[in-house]
Amino acid sequence: MEYPDEEPGADVKLLMAEMKNQNFDVIRFASYRTACKLRFIQKRCQLHLVDLWNLIEAFRENALNVMDAQAPLGVTRVRALLNSLYYQLNKRLPPSQQLDLPHCVSLLLNWLLASYDPEQQGCLRVLSLKVALAILCAGKLLDKLRYLFSLLADSSGRLPVSRFGQLLEDALVLPASVLESPSFHYSESLPTSIFHQSRVTLNEFLSVLTSDGGPECLIWMPLLHRMANVENVLHPVQCDGCNRDSFLGFRYKCQRCYNYQLCQDCFWRGRTSGSHTNQHEMKEYAVYKSASKQLGHSLRKSFRCVPERPSRPLPHFPEEEHPLDLAHIVPPSPAASHNGLPSLIGPPMDSGQDEEHRLIARYAARLAQRPTGSTDTARQRELLAQLEAKNREMMGQIVRLRQQQEREESMRASSPALVGELQALRQRKAHLEAHLAQLQDSRRDLMLQLEALMKMLKETELAARAGVLCMQNHQRSPRSTPGSSPRSTASPPERPPIVAAHLQTPDSLVGLGADVQMAFGRTPEGRQLRDHLLVAADSVTHAMSSLVRELHSGVGSEDEASQPGPDIDGSQHNGCPDVSPQ
Image (tube, rainbow, N blue to C red):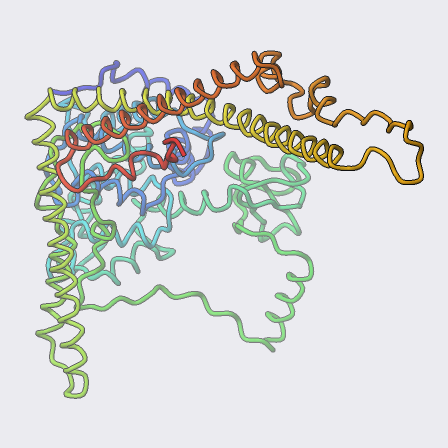
């Protein structure tokens, strides 16, 4: 016997106490009272945010679509289903509206156990779980009824009345869970009083359950959906019961008193004023029409110049076709630990993973057996061949992916030492890459300094050559001219610009150290220091080259340890530039 970790009745007692504080029991009508209570449970468990299609996807992911409807389901499987349901809901909600996942799962699980497992056996039937969640989730009533019909329909697409009794019994547990069983309870003769024939088609099922005079035991179900649709509808009129200027929800108008209108709270609780009494006939409005629209409606109704808009009929479905099996719309996930959740239900069922491909093959076979005209035979055969080829290709890809996943898992399980060594090599690689990045930054700074020094050295050599040429030209020129006195002597030549270069610091060395400025000076000590600086730069370049070779060798060894195959060193080196000496 399985139970949740916490006390099973604690959350349910708190939930029922909160529902009692809402004062729903003062509502006069049982159908509205039941719908209000179930709407409170729905919003308290956050099921009004879960769409029917998301619910079907959760059933599909947890392999409930292939289980028998009467099969028992343990608490662990139900908890896994609710975990995946709320986890996917949190992924769709904005960050500011995230739900408390453990609290929501615990609350809904304990409420389902208290409702459908009163004997505390620790399990739920698959059909009971699907019926309860399908009724309480968000979505259109027509889609929900189609899904409930598909759960119990036979192979010919018809619903036996005996199976409808099972569906009705599980649905009427919901009013009993909110203490409304005296008004809506199940009896053995109830299914035959709703449907007189032994087997019901989908169109008959939808027509009876969605009509205005539908079965009284299920009248709260369409009212629950209508109540959810009008929660935010504003009526800008004054309520004659509580004198509010405007209100939300339903609006009720008396058919005897002139322009007498009540909000839903006053009408449900029997509040009246003036000459109006609760015995007067009231009409319910779910929308508000302006005065101009009301006048147009009155004129159309009076003169009959414009035909009335016909009511929207229900869609008609084929009688012989099986209704759409909504449980197979969403394909299953390949692994049970998807969505980041731990595997709580064991290995996935192989019978449910390839169901969509079997459905494709079955549908192709049915199309092949159906008689067609001679003009479309070749086109249909070609389409069938394409579908079968795509199906075979998809099945082959699935088999290859499964085999690859099994090989990887077996390799990891058989050689833990190899996995540890691979992790150590990856850590070593990350350390070497960080060290290489630091050395590259140092090399970049050094290359900038060397470039500035080389530029300054070239400028100094050019200035020295210009000074030598100037002195040679001065020595070759005559010391006196024919018109000058023999004793006259030429003025002493100016010193070449190189002397100024010796005495002042060049602009290219501004900001560097004193040793660097002296190394590129004209003194003998500067030449010796410059030679030492160039030798040091060569040493740094050789050291970085050896580090790059070591990094290459480390990456190669890691690739050999991780996966035998082609060399992927170029993609694992992060695109580091070659730092070997130029």
